[in-house]
Image 1 (cartoon, rainbow, N blue to C red):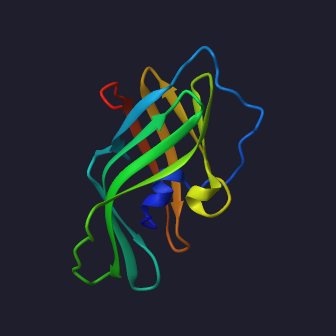
Image 2: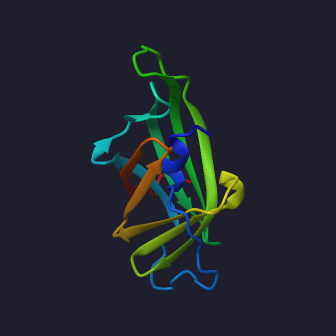
Image 3: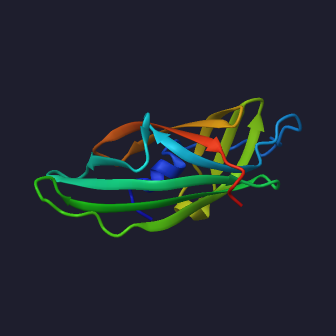
Length: 163
C-alpha cells in the first residue's frame, strides 16, 4: 500500500478501542460513505511530503469510500497513485491502484470510531474518531513519516447508490 495514503486511510493515531463498546441502537450508520473533500479540496487530491533529505513522496488520491456493515466491521477503499522521488526531479506518478484497509467500527451518539485491524497495517491498531451528522462524515487524520507531519480532514457523504 502506498506509504502516504495508508495513513490517509487509517491515521497515525495509535490507540486501542474499548472492547466493551457496542453499536448504538439509536443511530445506524450502516452503508457507504464516499470521500468528497480532503482539507476542503475535491478529489483528486494531490500532496507532497518531504521524506529523506532531498526527497519527497508525491501522491494523488483519486477516490475513496468507507463501507460500514451491520456486523460492526468496515472496509476503507482508495484508488491512488504515488511516487518517491528527488525534490528537483520531474517524475510522473506511478499508475493508479486500488487498496483497502479493514477494521471494526462503533458509534456513540454522533461520534464514529474506526479501529483498524492489526493485519491491515502490520503493526499496532490505529484508532480514528470522526463525527457523523445527517449523512455527513468528518474524519480528522494526522500523517507523519519521520520528516513531515500533516493534518488532513476527510469529508464524506452517505451514498445509497453504492453496494
